[in-house]
Length: 236
Image (cartoon, rainbow, N blue to C red; front, top):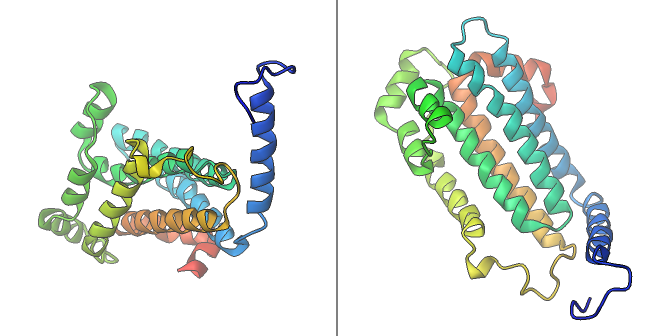
């Protein structure tokens, strides 16, 4: 499409053509990697259901009640990220996936530190991803979890490097590194099977990190989650 030419159908023509292209991209994507896509959907549903299970607890503090809303947000972001990637809008998809990873980790980080939650909510305090990860991997946090009798706790240390690597990769998209530019590619905004597979794999990695982290902290609720969503257990 030559943008220098006057469009007789009006200024909406570019959006009409884009919509048709993206619709076709999504149609093709949904016919590929069906098994992987199904697994991603099940794990996304687990996000929302786990939040619901935890909200049903009667002993939650006010801050914890509010933190449980993050589960619904990351569910919505995962689904939207996959949808955008299916349309071959890779950069917006990756941007949302970074948000999923950051907010998913923040659930645990904020859960036991209500003052940090209120600073984040009411006083515009930003959350630092590396600080959150390092805290959750600290010896003191490990002792806290073990002291709270979370028998299924297996540690988070093995995933720290991978977690930071994924976050860095996704951050490059947000910060506009030239290596991530979509507009310079010859097949820009067209369906690409390799890119679609790559995004689904990346989503799966993020989901697995978060589910493992949440299982360590909310082991009793996670047991209930597996009862309500038995298909999740079959994926593990």
